[in-house]
Length: 249
Ligand SMILES: [Fe+2]
View 1 (cartoon, rainbow, N blue to C red):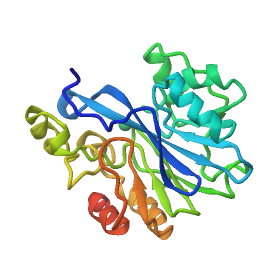
View 2: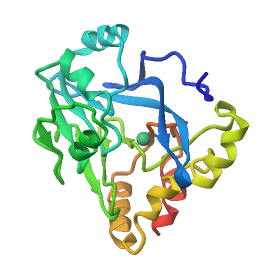
View 3: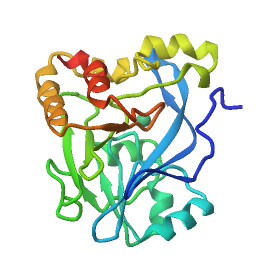
């Protein structure tokens, strides 16, 4: 019993557009507003780069079926932790694909060590996309938080924005009634999902930085948004982004 309805079927590739897929994963329990915790559904994004290699964002807890489906797409080259909370399964992927590069977000090494989760990162994400994926994906370091900086990515060919925690969007029908108030309090209840309250609070006094980053995201003109937790935005992406990020304006 997880207290949450997941995005079945799990651990299967679901196409979003040409060369981009998501896979919904099992539940994780994460800290929520005011010292509470909530079960979170998980979701990863896979992009096939123009060299055929696979770029995996926020890898979920895998199983053999998912690995087999991934193997049919191409070689796994990149495992990306977009922020210091989305890394827990990278070790499992690295064991299966030792040649893949595990990319670290700011603070993720310390976070993993503090949680006693072993992950060997190979490289650090930087302000601009590395040559390995710059032809297919833009990236931006979303600044302003004192605690958690998330890297956001934009798949140009499909105009898809990929986020981890900068928008969380829990659907009422998928969470228990007891969780509704917690999700609403945290500001992460669909149809008004956004960054959770505790995350937004870490931007206090530094929203100018966040505002500039948000402008950078909007300049990409995203047409859809993939989220790691909850309902994605397959249409009206720009309006949804303006709504979800109104706290930075
Ligand atoms: Fe998350």
